[in-house]
Image 1 (tube, helix red, strand yellow):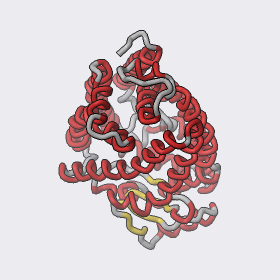
Image 2: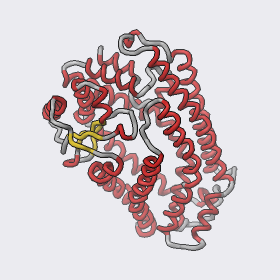
Image 3: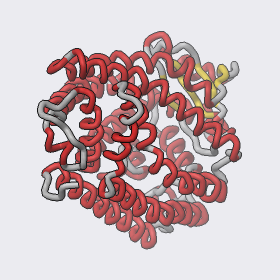
Image 4: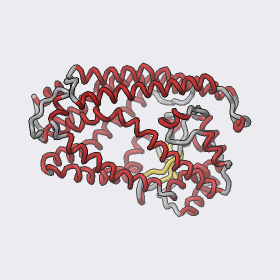
Length: 421
């Protein structure tokens, strides 16, 4: 490792900056919670009690106390793997028994991720079976957890394989234009995944059953019709089999679009409140939020790929981290360049969080306003948000600076104030 190398300096600075900023933000939130976390806001005095706030604080404190050693060890491992030359040694070892570009890249990514996976495993287990079970959220068994991890690994592998094949092939045959073609492949592939996910992938983990006939189904179908939203059906997901947390969402694309309600959500909210929650989700559809994000992401992805296409040709990128690269850089090693760039610039992504969160929160306010309009009143959504906040033990009040970096949804009190304005 060459410490004077510009890419290494950017990597070290980004790692230190992200780590320090995260530690400061979490400490600010922790201190704020100690001081104000058990204060019942006047606006919620009829719905929230001190016992709920006390449990919320203990839940958040438990997650914070687990996060501290986890982030410290994660950063230490990242630096150690780079400093000790793990990645160049792994690459040379793989190259010693196969020269097939695709298998080299696949094995490098799988084996290179093993140290991080082993480090995160005990923290994930304690989070699930220590914290989540203690606070009444987790219904997982150990065998179910292991099965989910194995399923997730193979599904990710199946998804990664064609993208990796496309990237290696384009490195070899598309020369200077690989980044344009890869961007096109990425978006076509993403569209395909959005179509097949609700039909083939999601049922691997959960059972989806059509919503039973009754008042709730009638209300939701009328709401969908009123908004001109055509879905392939209303489905209930057996979320309670794993967790007590609640949610509702749209998934799919085109004819595969479907509305999914967690069974926990149906148990916790009234029909009127669920209608308001669905009205919020329909607000995203009516305001074209997903389409707008896609229109932003398409040029952003191509710009990033264009920059990457130039940086991966620089031998200094490889030399700084202990790799040997000729000039011009051979296509067989360019995937290493993409991996190294993710290390170099990945931690700087935290600077984009306030910007992305700002636009996301703006969309959430718009969706809330649409739900208020379509339902005739904002009160059902207010009571739904309060119940969900209580059931999920989410913090009611957080410091402004913390929400700026960590909240892509507006805090509860801000949403209620906007709905009751």
